Image (cartoon, rainbow, N blue to C red):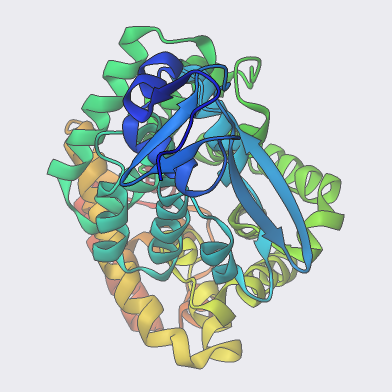
Length: 410
């Protein structure tokens, strides 16, 4: 029986051209029943000429509550990136942060979350694999670039890093909008700040001018500002800023899993440690571990092991002994790779990074004039080992005493 069409129709190909989107996106919308009055004739679809381009939707669940975030299919990179950021920068259930994988239907957005979860667990191979699924989609690749950079440096894959650095610099140079430029600069700064290269970050990060940052990404930008304080050794400012953000967002953070909260807590621990407020440092560190470790998320801690001079190891042994060996193994790999990245970027200023992880811990304490007996207690090493290691540090750093060591490190 021949079907009679009572209105003007167009093909899926014509609709894709008219709406400025890909044919696959049109086919997906058709399969989901998102285009009113579209009809399937055999193996082909016909679409009313009057049909307007629909919105795609990412279904976001938080606990038992559900909400729909409408993500339009815009033509500009700036609009598309804004929509994707809004859809993925969400908080997961604290009890089940993996649940977000099943709640988001868009493949590229799911890749973002899966890559991030694998990264936090320290499975860089799988994280890298999901980062690569965004190839061919400029907005999706830009969205996931921060994870890709962290994975590349942590695993020592500098070819992978170079790919994303080149991509991000090209986006910045292309001037696709202030928000796009700021996002690309922010993603590059994640690598620079993590490797102790704050001077390479964009000026607006150093000045805390977040005018052109997408609202949902501002916490990430603020965290980098706090990292800037860390490398400037402004620990009071670092602690005040981190505590303020944690206080402002405490109601939401107590209910949900958010890696930003963990990062802020560990920065509070670092600041308190350098300010010799050791009880507070331990409380902050344990609070962060209590959120992350039950889910196997250890990477957020291993990169800061040298800043805490044995505190991380002691807390892990005390509360999560099953993760102790993993923390030690990961820290050796990750710290060495981030140190190598630092040296790669700034070859003429690598003296502090010639030290081993243990030497860095001892040097940090010795430079602050902590007594050898106290260093021995904190690091669980013999007094003789501490004294001998200090002499090795002096030799490597080309200094003669603690005062000169302090000047070299601080």
